[in-house]
Amino acid sequence: MNAAYRQLTIFQALMTGHLVKKAALANQFAVSPRVIQRDFSQIRQFIAEQHLFYQLTYRRQLGGYQLSTTQATVSKQAILLLIKITLASRALTKSEMAQTIDGLLQLISPEDQNELRPIIKNERFYYQPLQHEQPLLNRVWQLSQYITQRQAVTITYQRQHRELVTRTILPEAIIFSEFYFYVIAYNPRYHQNLFYRVDRIRHLQTTSQAIPRSRTDRVEEGELRQFIQYMQPGKKIDLQFKFWGIPEAALDRFPTAKITARYPDEGAVLIAAPTFDAGAKMWLLSQGANVQVIAPADFAATMQAEIKRMLARY
Image 1: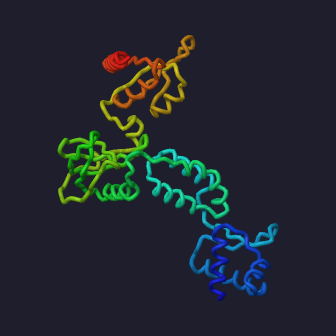
Image 2 (image 1 turned 135 degrees about the vertical axis):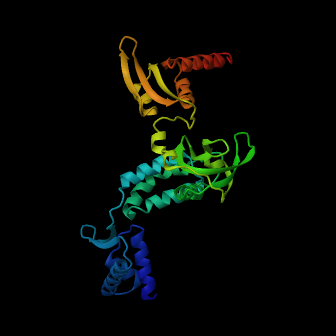
Image 3 (image 1 turned 90 degrees about the vertical axis):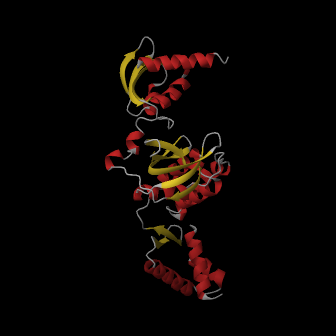
């Protein structure tokens, strides 16, 4: 076995988080401890020349050498949370999920990777992606580039009932909500911003068609998140409703909501929130008898009519 192969073998063991001991390596490769010490020196030199974010450290208490990171990286706790959130989203195919998790793990030291792998092992094994089975990593990145470049595109889009349509749009923002990625894009045909699910885009290509939009017309996705529910825009309203559930749940659903009154005898609160009516309606109906819409009056009437239609099915 030549020196290069021996050093590669040692480096691979270090990169996978193993503790290596000089005497054990000398015995394994049938060389003297002094030769192994020279190998360590050459590995240190290689790390320095390649500007790797590692250093070879002697662990006196353990009696061996390990690689430690020198980069100000994200913590293992943050990586664990990111992986958990990504798995819970179910948004990616199995292969893209594996690629994403492995990439996140590479941001922490081999020691921390070994600590995290058993924690996520079960959830990773049972991971079930969504039904659409469409790869999204490259498509979301591609659309993000077009947003930055203000590049119009022509898409072939599969509508809800599998009908294929062609649309020329100007992508303006990408949002993730309730399992799906959406591109918010200006459609000159309808003179408004519309929402398109990214997994339903079957084909996409750039176009030379100019779609003029001023900076003041730009979609502010951060602001939009404050008012929209379930990616259902509808009409913006000043919603008021009495709520008998856990107030925190309602306040988390409507980020701009405030409790404006309390009814201790009823165990209820009055909540006010500027929001879009279509998505708000979906959430309010999901709360059953814990909700009573107070205002606007026409929205309360819409809720009553919907509840009557629901009752008629039973």
